Image: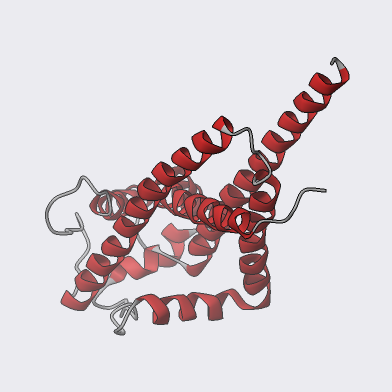
Length: 218
């Protein structure tokens, strides 16, 4: 049995952060999920706005959160208050940090993977897979207990004001973004992390199987 190394857990944490940030980026930009929820959650009926208009305003919000978008947020047909626009600016800054984290960690992991391959040390894969697996399990447990509470705690941690408490009268965009949609985004992020953990397990299995076959032939 190979000796346990704390560095393997460190590598696992890097993988966890990478899959988390990649999952957030994918969830934010995966528009088909929201388009599905327009019908699934009957957003047009609950908001009193046509589906085509909902998509138009939602697309404007997603375009704004792109790292390549320059300028201020403007909804095509919906009014917005100054506090709401400030909140969306803070949200964009948070999303941009995920792009940065994903890029930096991707480079670090590439260096680590190439170094480990050079010295033929793949012992980090399984501990990393297990470490990555812990994150979605904890989040899933928190969601199962109380997603609404988790949603509120998230906003209180990452935002130092109450601008996220929208008034539908001045910021009708909030009627187009039900909590259930955000839960679906979270489930997508969890799925991405689980897929990442599975990939690490799978690569470890393939390498171990290849090594066993090599030993049996020598």
